[in-house]
Image 1 (cartoon, rainbow, N blue to C red):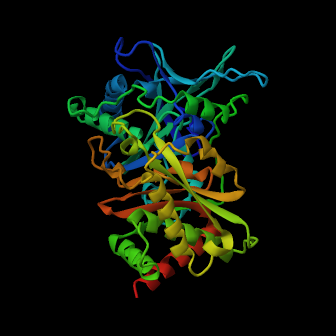
Image 2 (image 1 turned 90 degrees about the vertical axis):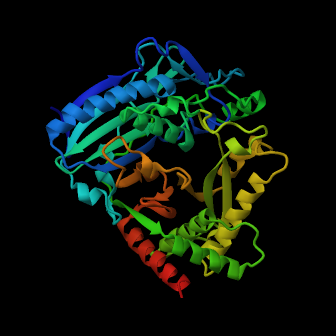
Length: 458
């Protein structure tokens, strides 16, 4: 058996849909998908209590996960497909639209492994070494360059056994494959199949692959702003690192106190939500923590906060919730560093994030009115902090048959300084926030975060 760091590889498998159930199919990318083509892969890991033997894992769990994944891929074939990209010569005015392509025999790479790391440490909320999570998520596999195209695997799985204590299921997907809503639908289908419950087949939960959002002009616009000329090799997370990851919880009581404070300062503010106060508070704490550890920024230097808005229910006509792919629009808030790090930084951040969301979702001309200019905000020279995830999706309900996860981590925030936000384990009314910083900044952030909550509680 192979050994990688604290990992022992037990088995490598290639899981395909059942024979002759999918065949040759393709799915063109849309303008919602194409902006994600050159983004880093998306990594998630679920941790489960599993106080059972290795033989039980290999003889019961492994066969069931493989079979149920195969059944699920029959209905979610893009997860077992490849992304086909056609790089164009610099002088070419014609660009071919990328597509997701499935041919008979295509599969998902699934790794089964055993890990010697401390399971109880990994599932805590306290600061933990980022590098300890990297062996638990798979890489996508090899990119293949053809005569006029590049083929990139879209999805991979790693199931890791921690002796007599737990299991982790790590997933990696190319971001152009889908957004969080589609990924959650896939996971719910897989867990249903794993429990021999295929009710998702009859209750309207199967994905819709029809490209319901037809806008050739926007497709061309987004493709032209994606530099496909470069041969694309997805980056990977590797250790060692001086960075740590930690989870912070905002309870419903905390969130209500944050709302109350904002409305006390700005009583006429029209849009205040649990999500906006969470984003505003975390963003301001991050910037203040950087100041505390000695970062020097000019008065006019800018900070940006980037979140995604699900467009499915906000399109005209509406797009079904089971539409497969990416269907999110960026909402970017830009504030001067000196304002955000100031005494009223939290209130101003919450106000501006809320106004940005409200403006987009209430635009009478539709969510796509400014879609051709979505990329312009990203050109502004500013530090960018993005949000991964949403508290609206119940990732803590992803149960493969041995109980709900005791911890859920978005490992891919380590690439670019993003944060993750999800509904809390045990209470959808509370929020979990995942962060990845240097040890020094994490210590500063923790102090600012806790002191602020104490002040709002008075």
